[in-house]
Image 1 (cartoon, rainbow, N blue to C red):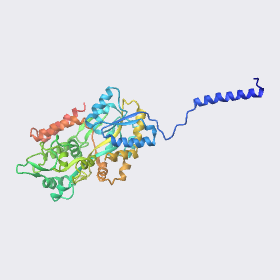
Image 2 (image 1 turned 90 degrees about the horizontal axis):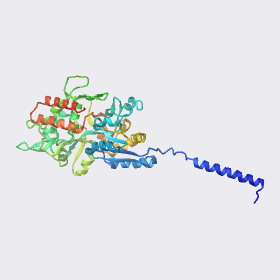
Image 3 (image 1 turned 45 degrees about the vertical axis):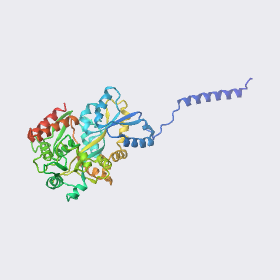
Image 4 (image 1 turned 90 degrees about the vertical axis):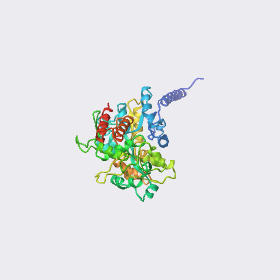
Length: 435
C-alpha cells in the first residue's frame, strides 16, 4: 500500500520518538532514596552477646534498608583474640570490631586509626567522657567510643543487716575499721565461714585485675603512657614524678591484707570458691563486679537480697575514681569494606543508637550528653554516676598481665618476697610484656 506524504511523515516521526524513548529508558536510573545509605556488606565482631546488637540492628535496618547487609557475630571473650588473628591469616577479616580498651594494645598494629584531622582531639574531648580518651593515641583515634562498664560494689543486704549495718561503705577506711571486721565470720580454727570481702588472691577473684587497677588508680598511679608507639609503664609512679608514693606497691599491700592469716582483716584465701559464686550463695558480703553483672546476678539467684553502690574511695581523696571497661567501634586495617564500616560505625556510635546499646548491655554511655540525662534504672543509676570518673589503662595483654599479678601475689602471700620488691618486679615484667 502506497502511503501519502503526510502519512509517511507521521510514521517517520513516531519511529524516531520510539527510538529516542528506548534510549532514554535504557539510560534512566531512578533518583537515589535520600533515606537509604548504601553501606554494603559489613561484618561486625564483638565479645558481648548478640541479642542486644541484633535488636538494635533490626531497628536500624527498618529505618534504613541500606544497612540490610550489616551483621554482628559474637565470640566468647576467651575466644575473641584467637578468632580475630586467625581470620586475618585466612584473609576473611571482619570489617568492624566492638571491643574494650583491654584489647587495644594487643591488636593495635592490626587496627586503622582515625586521624585527628578527621576527628579533632578537641571535639573528641568535648563529646566523650574523660576515660574514653584511652583510645586517643599518638597517631590517631583507635576507636569511636560507645559505652563504659564501670566497676561497682554489690553488697548483700541480709548479711549487712545481720551485722547491724544498713548501708554500703563509702570509704576504704570504713571498710577496714568496721565493715570487714563486723561481717567476716571465722570459726575457732580461723576457717572463713562468711567472707566480708574478696581480696588478696588472683585465681579465685573474678575481677582481680580491675580491683588491683582500681586501687592503683585511686592511689594516683600514672599507669601507662604512650608516645609514638612506645609504652612507658609507670604503675608505681605518680604523674610527673620518678619516685614518690609508689601507688602500685600500696595497692598490692592493701589488697593482700585480706588474705594474710595473721591480719585482723583476714577474710579470704585461695581455698575458697570463686568470689562471684560465693556472693551468689550468700557466703560473701561484698562483691566487686562490673555494673553489667547486676541483672545476671539477680537472674542467677532470685532470692538473693543485694544492692549496688559506687566503689569505696579514700576518706581524704579529692577526686573519685573507679576502673572501667570502655567499649568502642574500631576498624581493622584488613577490612574489605572500610567505607561501609566507617558509615556503620558513625551510625551505631551516634547518640540514639549508642544509648540503645549501652542500656541494652547495662553499660553507661560514653557520650557526655547522654550521661547528663541520667538513669532511673535500678542498676543503671549507679553505672551512670560512676561512668564520669571511671578510668581504664593500656595493659599489654589480659592473660600475660594476669600471670604477672598471680606471681606477685603468690610471692607476697607465701612470704617469698617483701611487698615492695614483688610489686617492683611485677612492674618490670609488665614493661617487658609490651615488646
